[in-house]
Length: 418
Image (cartoon, rainbow, N blue to C red; front, side):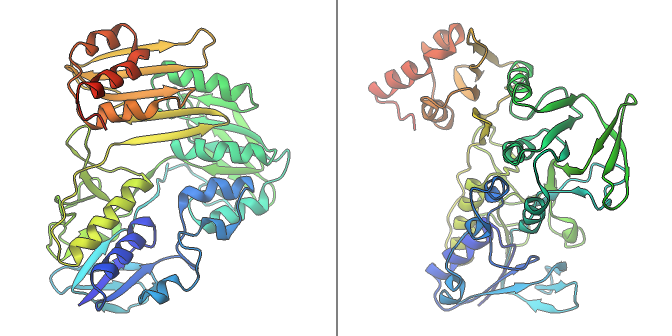
């Protein structure tokens, strides 16, 4: 049986390894668009900071790992697939047959639609090649403007500052990482970053960028302000890489819709990673989770099911942990709550620790924790287990800092809060 996997990220690699483990005789080929061995995008901030080299980003350090497993690798960009003919066509014209196909193409940087995106001094930090290019260019006092203040932007912020650049962030929304925090949490993070040398332009859009090779970039902002930069980094979010599937006949919403076996609307095609719209534990809805942990779990289950097993994907909890120059921000579940739900929050006197909990009736469904990682596993357990809090709901509404006491009491009385 011939298995093709499109995508060389964690979902694709783990699926190939899992498939080989359960089916030692099938043909497995991974198709990717980039040169070199598969790597982790999550490692790129460490590459930028200088804490690792390019080899440190690799998912498997042994150069012969894939060959030893009989997993073939092929470089190419897929132009289209035909579910009816069970073929895929590459942009170079080659056509490949498959018995089962896994789509693990992940995401691509969103295009903010700003004139000047093609300027030579406007870059993204999405691929290993991007990271190596930035490492080559970054130097002390370089004027860097970063467009975007979401999770990806803040993961590379510290790495840029470690290189000694003069950093300005331009963000269209009113706070940093708006998907993770509310206005209070955003203000805390903003103050923390500004005291460490980051200049902020929030609730501001870039209207256009102009420049010439070697002369930097001039950014005109809504409101008329003009910023001069030696380098612009665009980190304005990501979108699932599904453009090549528009005529495939597969069911596509934001991403590729899959069932509990991670099968698409075609029984011979599976999807995994942050291109797949799969079950979220918090909401019981089909969502896209751009998390490496989710991608790995998807890959494991998709690989088993491609091998002929029937293993259900239970769902994963949406969560993010971000270290913004020493200020750790963690979010779990439905961080902005549910319609009609309750919330409680606490802010320390020094303004450096913030906790916000979200409830659906007497169940904890979301949380944001800023400034500490102490006992956050208990919060995750309370959300992931969908536990009825009973008397603890009222106490947590009065003071959310009692979450650890709630967890310990529920465990003591036999509630599986894990």
